[in-house]
Length: 416
Image 1 (cartoon, rainbow, N blue to C red):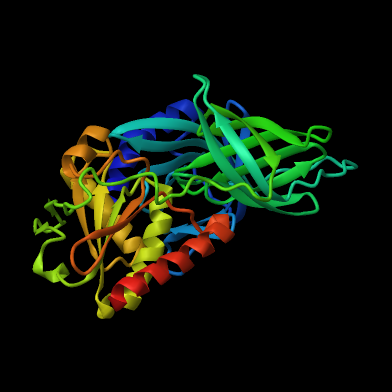
Image 2 (cartoon, rainbow, N blue to C red; image 1 turned 135 degrees about the horizontal axis):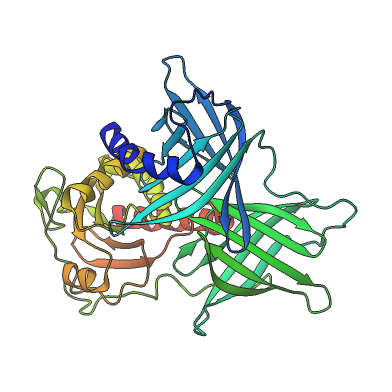
């Protein structure tokens, strides 16, 4: 990865220097400690908090504080007056010019999708203690609880979501869960009748802004992802609202036929659920991609569960669909994911996440609604359940319910 960072520096060093007027011969001293960063979106600042420290061996550590989660990376370099931070797993990098006093940064977040870059302007200042600041004297509306929400695209398409939030004073945190996953950790403030939430995990970057109408009891706002506004949204408090059953969204074209595939792992060995190593065992097929934040949450859960139950006849095969046409790069992405979560089950390269690739890879699977999707196979090789999406730990109660239900179902299959 250091070689990749070096290549990135060579490719971007001139760009950053020209764009921000850097004098490369200058001597710069970065201030370590806590920082407040912000991606500059069409809806204003998308703030996040992070820390930077120099380690005893003269390397550096960058820690992103994403709600209750911390994202840590040591893939952090200072070259001249430029800072380069590569986030773990995701193909995303912060590259910025360090100010003369070392107390501010200015640059870009560079994300790669299908081998093409997108860039979002980025600024940061030392001393990060808050994301949003509430104006004095404004009594915050009470917005904690469960919210039946709808997200609207400009073309009229809509998606249902369940908002789950906890509020203390003006501080609020939680997430939106959908049938395909969730928006991971979000936190922010309620400033009078205004709601501001943001979340950034190194790749996914979300800014939610809304107004609360006390008379109607409705929230109305906008969602920005990266730099662009992608949706408007509304929500009403509803303690009984539920999402569609994730077990009903995807099925097999021929329920009596097995899921047949054969894909290579990193050492070129083809892996199939019909291999002798998986016979007579309960097997979970995890359809994922290293680019997918909800897939990372599911991988963290499955990796631990697999380690605890492998000796009892439980196995997992990860079918990874990567957003790159470069085979070596795809396997590197998978390897980074496995190392991040100490994955000890096989992960194979199944193609790209394009619908045509997924259908070719798994011809007996009905339309894939979301990444991740898990297929649970019993000891006789029969598909017993297909679960669409994954509600991660940011959702709180739905995540706990999933863990409990998944564990109980696997216990039933192991006992058969």
